[in-house]
Length: 330
Image 1 (cartoon, helix red, strand yellow):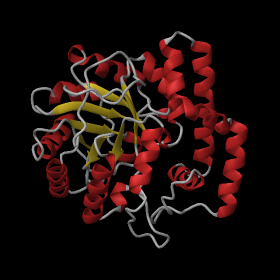
Image 2 (cartoon, one colour):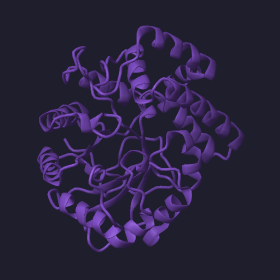
Image 3 (cartoon, one colour):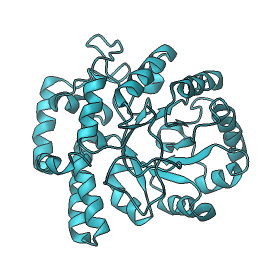
Image 4 (cartoon, one colour):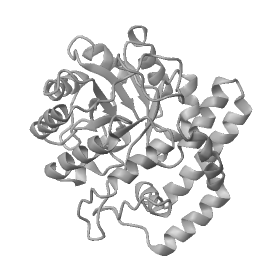
């Protein structure tokens, strides 16, 4: 069963699952961690329970095999197997966006064609990160080759300059891509340039969906017109963010800012303990064992996990669990 995009709406929606028809999604999309065994091999066994865990929090979709998923540390065969596991586990309850970006364009094309065969909801790709596109025009040309392997699926460019070193204006990208990428659905915008984000949201009368990709400033994204957001902390903090969304929509801005500050403080704790590896360790504490990170990333020690959890308590993390019951069935 394929989950399709819903119709456009104002800001993020924490209501029912994705509507049928159209190409837009509303709500929170988790960037899931890739499970490994203790020895560092791909482990697909946790994926079904992981999908259930996200559905129970009200998450609307998954962005599989991106930065949080350690995609560029996986082999081609592992990336394909991982996507197959998530597509099956989602069972139509979650939209599945396949990240197909690669340093090799030929491999990115292969991943896009594989995603199309599986019938996922959409594909996305970051640019090559070693030999990088030298101009917006080269970036569009690169994306066009990848998107052509799955022409009937919405294609989302994955903009994350902090990791890729490719920092072109996304407004310029949309301007150049509008006529050259017929399947372009929009951008996964993981950057702090809110002015550029706003221009992209408004580009061509809102023609494209611009996923907001910075969890720590989601409230600012809402103010700029975000309809959907993709992030790592939506794996385990979705209830907090849905409450932020509700407060924003009802005009309770003081409360919304207070809740966003909890997210900021918790993310600061994760950053002190290594970001991705810290959150991956936390998932085991929450009952979803995704195993260690893969080299060159280093997993947290047991002592580090205990210390992180103590700091998260001070930051207000465990008040989030009190909100979780309210997120069931969103």
